[in-house]
Image 1 (cartoon, rainbow, N blue to C red):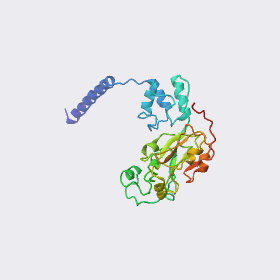
Image 2: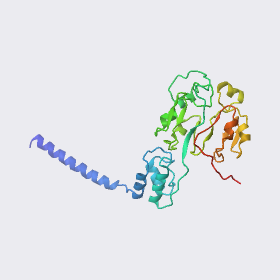
Image 3: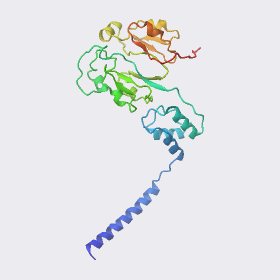
Length: 275
């Protein structure tokens, strides 16, 4: 018998052995697929951003099937996804008020004094841990644009003043920009909110004035002017309680530093005050 024939027979025999082995393995290690999980996963955006608190859309679908997640738990999918998920689960459709990202800093290159030139990778996290960036304010936006790079929905961009800008129509509240910011500049708020204190500085008034022309000096004028007690000043910084704020804009008018601004088109909100 020739070598060629022997080789062919050997290869055929090995192929048969492997085929049998694979068949046995497929039966032994077969994992049953839950059709409910499959249907739920198909209804999700498939972005796998983790904004729901689970490790991707598949994990979130499994959480939904097991009753460990709420139908409106996907901020990216919004109302439509919540309705689709609720229909699959056979429950009443509910959806949270849509949220969007806000950048709580106005101290760009024009407003914030330069302390030094940052030399290194253009990543806010690295800059914060090493040289603290180039701006004089150690609490403000570093300006490397790490949050913009983290956004997968084209909802953020850097402006000419080295500050991130949010395009609210594109924002899905995935929270990526919030998670990567080392100074907690970015937050997620109810999209109806149109009044924001864009400062994070805990420095005293004199120090703030030295490094930023639009920083909060904790003068308390906004706190005194607010008719719904939505603003409090603690640790040298005014803060808004968005659960109370009604967008009346009275604080905007009295702020001497221009730290508080308003967004056009955001209406006054009627909110029920806690008793």
